[in-house]
Image (cartoon, rainbow, N blue to C red; front, top):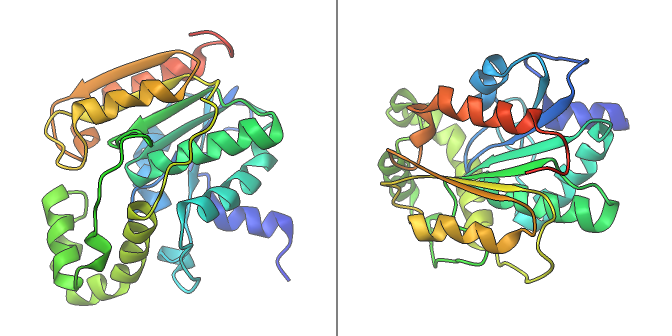
Length: 255
């Protein structure tokens, strides 16, 4: 039987633990992504920030576990895990599918537990109230690989290795299904500040779809457009690290 501490360790990776940090940044991966995507973020943030990278089931060391089929269920799991870490302010950083997940986690923390996140960063994702009809998860394996190549977010060595792709595709397909079948349920706006970040050439989200995150908070809203596509953050890592560090240093309740 898995203990609560063991369950927490399944979900959370701390590559550079900083037990004396004032703020925790929770990093939520994109569809098909894993906690290790955020190792550079963990290494690059200053000592006042402790980074918690979330590891979803169905990949890497959790490959034998079934994937979580919906964003709602995934948000329930992540929220339950994060309650163990609320002794410090939480900044949520989600990229692509992770941004939608971050929004739903923030909703649950505020609504069900009275925990207002320090901030939510929504990267490379349209606002929940700006849906598109997408069916990548219904394509055959080659079709999904082509989508991944279009977005340029996966190491080409993996995309060109049939065995690695065979192992990775079930989690990728499941994540796309969860992201593409997500339906926003209207409700109260968040109280926490929201930062929306987007590439100016992202095929998955337009600048206006990203700007629509302003509808989802009663707190401060900031919006940044970067040169690049869906994984624009690879070319702007230092600037994004500065944004996260600056937001993490702002006292709670201020813009």
